[in-house]
Length: 403
Ligand code: PLP
Image (cartoon, rainbow, N blue to C red; front, side, top):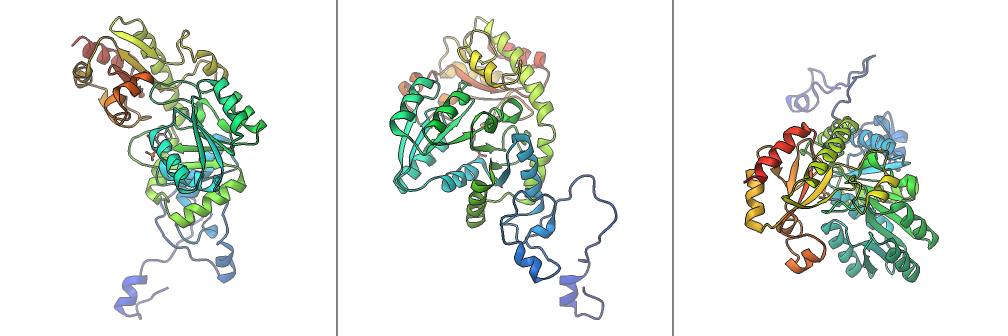
């Protein structure tokens, strides 16, 4: 510790840095941006080099913030509890999390079966792995459980990758059935649970081995932090942790703190978002200007039975897709531009309702024919329903449709 006998250069570095240990603990965790950690002695310092295993707010276990740090560890501990996992490793984005999970799970020569319906960049990442480390990669329609079964039996993969609620048409993959068959052929199952969140489904409980999230979406829920997380049992988490340490895609202390703060209201936000989505989907379904509504909560939706099997009673998520009848791109843009409460934002899972036109954004690299083969016509919009009042949202859609 510095005192006034020290030189100005020394004082400017050391003055005011004495750590005060009080009898009280802050009710809300402080943000700890420190890169390094000081321990009582070298024995303790040496011991911190190993995987801290979801260590919570215990600075004695941290050494360097690319390895682990208190705010990241708290976030990991919290989401581990929500997903019913053994451990978790947080990342600076969803893509960084998926990248590290694949690095930890894949070896040259492996066979991978992935869902056709995966998020576009996850697909690109898998294609890149296939080229770089010689992986046999097959994309299959995961909404056809029979097709997945026959691919699993034919190719006996090492890894299966899917999402439960698909993008953009909010279809439901029968994870329970697929995980069972995948395990029968000895495959590891990796599930991106970003759209469903553990409020709707804990994939580890129905057979997944590893779960990933873009915490950017529903988990943070406020559209102000990029983040990702990988969850599973201790052994694969140690490998994932090793890759984070090497590659350094760690969330900053403030980002981890914000994400945890956002996560505190996940259940409330999901409850309101699911209830709003159910009301809006039912209203759209009755509207003659709407050609088709994709929402697994509708009784006649082809995915209703699977959703009812996988999700808690009466909950079907906060995502809807719908197709405006007889509309070209100009017409659909006019509708979107006419909305007053709902904005066009390339994300999802926020407190405010946001909407995306897949044909001109997420799926713009596909030809019109490729898009239409997947049901993504010019009139299709994806709506991430927020926590506003449902009547206000319906009135907004109604006035924009009347244009
Ligand atoms: N997984 C899904 C299902 C996504 O929708 C996204 C992004 O939209 C990602 C992963 C990637 O997450 P991030 O943008 O946080 O890197």
